Length: 432
Image 1 (cartoon, rainbow, N blue to C red):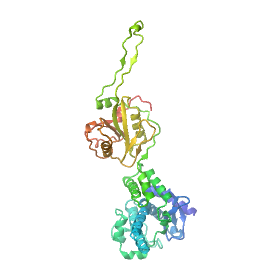
Image 2: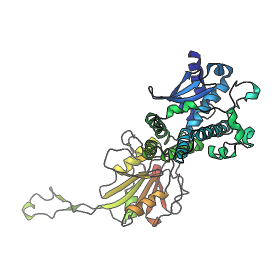
Image 3: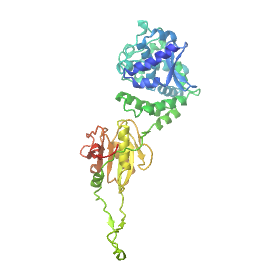
Image 4: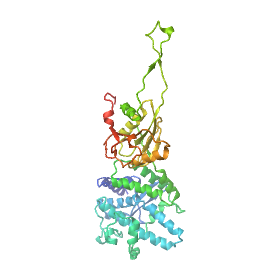
């Protein structure tokens, strides 16, 4: 067992070097277990420890070198990353509603297991560059049949869905495959998906949904996992998926850098800086004038502006802190209505202590959509605090939009709208 633990930890380390981040993260949520009841390896759920279990037949594990062992661990992880647990649940539930027989359901599960294995194994080779695990004919895997798309249906399957592969499988293959019975541990006795597993899966997605270190493919995989949870027929899993909307972007205090953007504000609202007025001299005080002059404040309407804070993963914590600081230190003559956004918009109280909410990706178009849906009158001023990386937006009033750019300061989406580099506006003598 100690040797199995060591090899499992080494497999996690090895996956880091082959750009296999998400599978590595999933490995950290579970632990290896010796199991004589399965011929090769598998994955399941420990309801007591509330962790993912990686099952290994000890005889099978001994036959694998380190690269092959890593392949097997990654294989089980990709099943989870591809939400195959949810897929199998959804399809079997549909068959039950159609009053399919138990033998038909079992045959479906066997056929789908082959399809899922083809997708997983081809993904490991073609997307993650893992060395190909030898097949049964090459006498490395004992009873294990390693399914690859080319050998099974004549084409590589890494860019196909399991359902696509399922439809192309010849019927005679069912005689040579066993079911993934250990997957039953992901389900409750009543057939629903285990809530603890759903919560763990949800937390995994939330943890990674804003991770700027993810590649585009990995970020897409996170989005796909979230979508699969939302579409799951299991009520609890679907609810958990819908709850994964915006994730708080915690910020450590307020930036000490100050922004000199008063002139920009006044340019946009066509409003002059307020001047102090002074009281007229009281005749009774003429003997002390001009030693005493009393100021008087005349009430001036506060100008309303609308601001959108980019809280997507490309915005660093330092930049996000600066964005919040800019709004909190806006001159008193202006009243701010603000949101934070990524691919959704979330209301944000500038005067409160809450953290901005964000998510994966950046969609500038949803800012205009939010304005159209939530304002009876279009705001006089719209400021977007961002790095400029996002998507195309076509505002109804582009002349009212101003972009405060920081970081990469991309301008291709600003088009002809006014935009400013925040770094140029930072006061030179600010204390950091």
